[in-house]
Image (tube, rainbow, N blue to C red; front, top):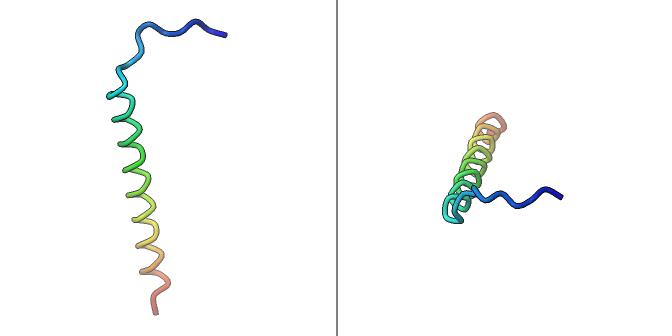
Length: 42
């Protein structure tokens, strides 16, 4: 098991990245869903 890294980013920085990735994934899913609705709409 590797030793803990003393240069870890602060908690707020790690949580910010996690939130940004989550928002980007939700936005990408919304774009795909919107495109599918346009294609499948009568």
